[in-house]
Length: 380
Length: 165
Image 1: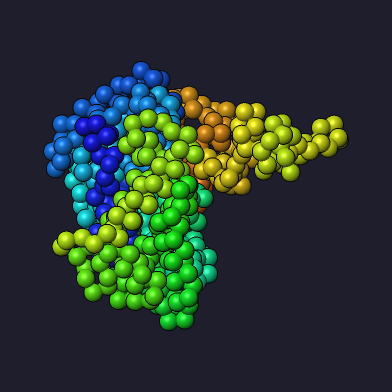
Image 2: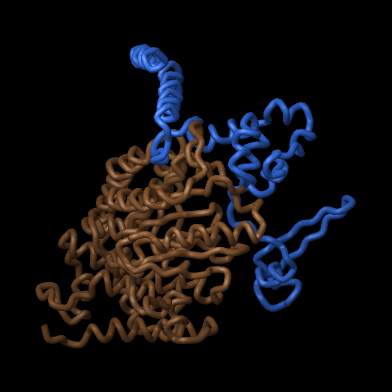
């Protein structure tokens, strides 16, 4: 598989589908594992790292993963490809720009990747759209079992699965959900969410890590405790308490916007539409920020039946009108613009590297054309 | 304020150096800082956080002297001094070899928990499975006593007795 085969479309987990997709964008589970009998990577020579890589690559490529698997040698991949894999959340930044022999096994539909020689010998990842943590857990557990039939992992009866960093010790599980929380932000309540997350020992990060949250209203929350609590208990806590409560807060904020602050909501949506439809230079940060407001408008109409002047205009501009749902501007379209206009995606699809100004021009052109194309009447 | 090196970009990094009692200031942009190899920290990296935790929770060995920081794991040659710098361990055996120093850190990172609970490798022998279950019940017993839930503590104590038979 070539990366250009997947670069011109969004992946399944970002399709805007799945349970509670109006707020929960995606669910992800990662497992950290190390092969017994080897040192952790910080103390491995490049020869040992290459040996681990070869061993795990062969095991993973021999598994029945439910989709066509490919291997990418990360240390030899061009810089643009590495940025691209990070943008699609298929590998971590640490893996993309680390040192020594390392690679990734991924399936075509991108629901599963295995980073080899990241911080640990093996980091498995399963990603799904919407709130699907139990389904992610079931799938990653099966894959982990299949690997364990062929490889022995470093394990201690007291500490569980042994990891390079003590913060991942025990289950080695890192659960992460990506949430879209624009209304909490608009109503000035996002700090409450941060405080509640901290009180529950959760880590909060932006779309691509620290500092990126302000631009897209997308937040990733993940567990920090991995020892002394079973995988199923962590998942149940996320599904039954954490996610449920955050959804309740965000929905309350959305209702508050509609009933008491609809001018704020309409202003944000109208400004976003005007800029996205007319700008000739747009940075990646600005695009994420504006598309977030369109996403809110669409979801508030779809899930809450909201119909403010700006939301109606949003749909009219799409050429469908609120009553005719033949060609509404969908979340999938918004997500498509969201992902395909990220810097590495733009350049990968353009076929060469571009300086920031050219990227901003190309990004603006793609968004303008997509949103204005939708204004044309379409035959249903 | 303009960058003092390139005189072009806005200075966003402000450095204060005190050398031999003399204070000097420098205002530079991010690009020049990168060229000068000046690291800008936007958040605390995990290894610093970890070594910070180790530093505030000194073990007996640490109190007795820094020499113990240099004791090397017989398997991989790793030392606690390296852990302070890198935030990662050298090999799985380090968990056993440096257990005394690592336990406070593990407790702090995992809400006071120090024993595994959850998935076991499918090849785990039955007696190891029992051993793990016992450790878990003991930990729950300690928690119950701490919470003064004596009814639960008695139940767990009986379970331990039964399992140890």
